[in-house]
Length: 368
Image: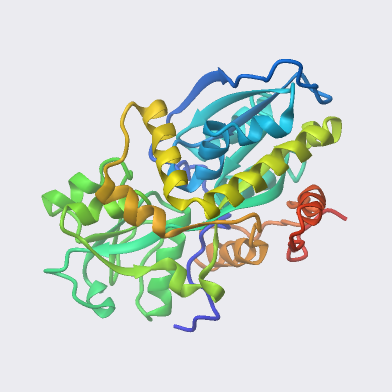
């Protein structure tokens, strides 16, 4: 398999556009929760054009830009007297529904639900305005049963859900190996077992699956059960980067409150800068945020390897989203979507330029 042809389709799994079932592109369950929490505003801080901005994200390491940005006050600092109200979600579709209903204005989300939401609304509901994270997806296997990539043939390998980002990526990898699998049933030279990430470790421990192509921290949880990392998906992509988390905004909110959107983007850029400059402190901050949200922190043997495999960046890696969409189409899981206009990176590029950074590209999928 050529490194220049990413086989996986981490974000673009526009697959979702054709498969409403794709509920867990980045999450670990199908429910959504609204914590309704507001961050503290400094006394005397000046409000922007909105009294508050409603932000959504997942209690997930690949959403650490938001976790850390809220936890450390980096987002609120840029917003001044405009209050942040946070909501957390466990599935992309529920976050898209919240965006469409006005329950949130801006969200951190995976590529699949973003593509699905954009396509289903005929390009009228959202824009992708920034990247946030890359990587964090691995093929982990039972080392007693699978000793090489070729040994995957004939085995039972889990993915999070039919048509989700990792599922499409795995189907593309299988096709590149020259093996045949029916995408809908998962039957063929490899048995693709669609299993919720929350129960995948138990399925592995029981022996009902031989491995899994999954995001973090599920991959590292499996390793604690004796699995071995056979392949890091980043190895399949040019420069070892592919989009796993984007930032989206309601088109209505973007039009009415561009100053607030710009402030959130400044906070996101500052958060990623702090994460990359202080990786250990940032990891601890993200874990503290997860503990507040879920009631339980991740143990060191899970969070340490998981954290190392995720890259936090502002570039949305638009070309990889487009490639992912093409993979979903070729897998027969998606009708070719019109993604023109899904990106509006002008606000981000303004922030990056002011911060002394390089502008990022929309791969020809930006607003005209």
